Length: 117
Image (cartoon, rainbow, N blue to C red; front, side):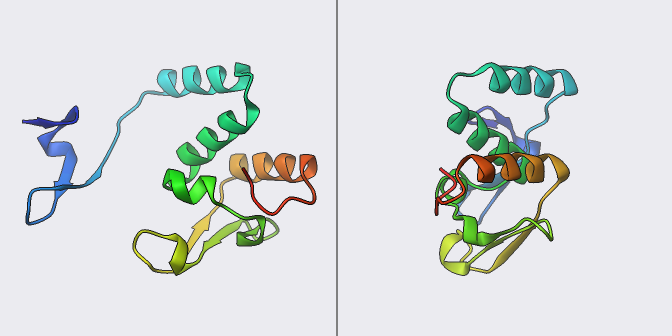
């Protein structure tokens, strides 16, 4: 049985049968196609938000509401307060080199801003 296109073996569910998490399998070729499309996209804010979603696994609201104060670029971490996560728990996300490069470029372009987007 499929739920929203996810095969039964690729999803978790709670006691009520509601989808709780999923895993998406993509090929390197599909990722390369996505990244090429994002690089060519006219709306760089949108492209950057999608990159952060893919690279961090964060929820869209967490990325779109992210504040620069949550990021420690020197130590390569993103600290999300309990108030900003679905689980209502503090979350520390390690940032890979691609994310750090992107965030440093974004910060240079908007040195005085509070929000990333």
